[in-house]
Length: 315
Image (cartoon, rainbow, N blue to C red; front, side, top):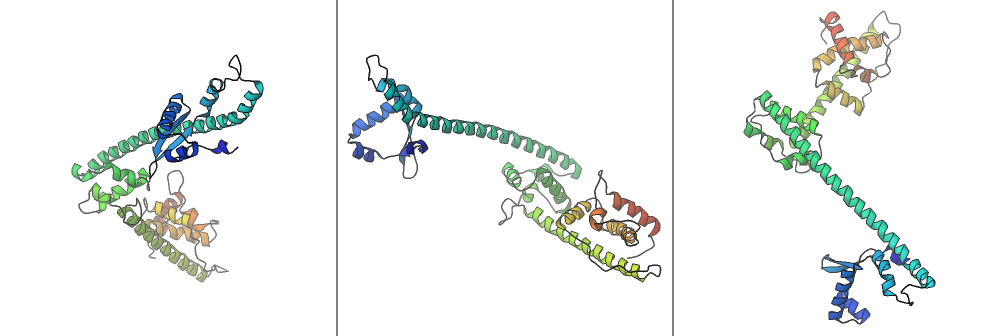
């Protein structure tokens, strides 16, 4: 049924008058009467402004006995009643279904709005608590910590709050005359991206690449040293270490708690034992940079080994 899919529709008063022959004054009275009865509702919207009509089919069904007085007792004949029900009931069911969906969506939107507002308050409270702690840790003036709430929520569209705080701390450690308002300087091209953070990410990635290149160099030099040893019957091929995007993330995280020198020093005895087959490892770098139980156990163990057995060696 074509009407079943119909929601609201629009007609100008002039169009309705032309199609029905109803005069303007009478038409306005009919629309008001139908609106009062709850049969229709109207809304002016759009550009140009147009009157939209919505038909409320359940109300029409309720009024059918009053509209059609076809028997002495005011009741409809069974045949006519069935005819009307066949026409109107699908429209009523469709109307109720759509309005239930609309009401459910409105309820969901209200809950989401409430949750978002509540979440926003929680985030702002967390951030202010963090700033209070940072102020005393870094001896920062209250003026330097002034910021616009809008800037914070804009940045949070692109960064997690913990991530943001991590780089904010670096910012106040490294920058000359830092201020929170300057920290919230957004990139002119990248939407919601902060200039300072994005530049730091580029610098950090370059540093990771530099460290991996150094590990590659050490790996190659230890293979050459291993192959020259008289005690070895067969040499190792000078293959490259396998580096993936995930591995680079592991390296970046390790550099937050370990220096480049500590990592390279630990790598020497580690790779020597791998080449001598004293340890069997399928993935050299992922195992070396493994982080378990809040520790870099492999790096720590081989760093201790280096300090005892390799302290004299320059590489």
